[in-house]
Length: 164
Image (tube, rainbow, N blue to C red; front, side, top):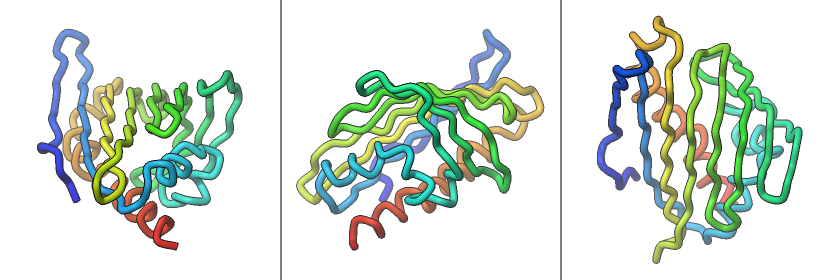
């Protein structure tokens, strides 16, 4: 259930790299604490969401600040991603991610809030595209396809997990 306005496309001509902002908003019929527990248990993400996460390794932990290496699945391929993430207890996380092989980096926010029917997830991912060839196809691939895939692989699975 998408409650936010349509995702926006931002083209930053000053740096000659494309930037795309992805946004999604979903209602999960479960308490914030339950949603937060799953979405911030990074080492178990491959178990919870195998269609998008192959592995996650925490290399450094300082309180709620994590440095991680992840292998993610996207567009039928696997990519190594470096993540610097801050867990916001009971409220989600923010993360700066770098994927040099695919040629992207980004700032990701998964923010949780209480809703009369459960938990509202507000998701924002500001993607910077560093490879010129990817910039050409970025809008349809990243803006539409990846968000639809993520919604199915993460949000739909999260709902199934929380129904158990």
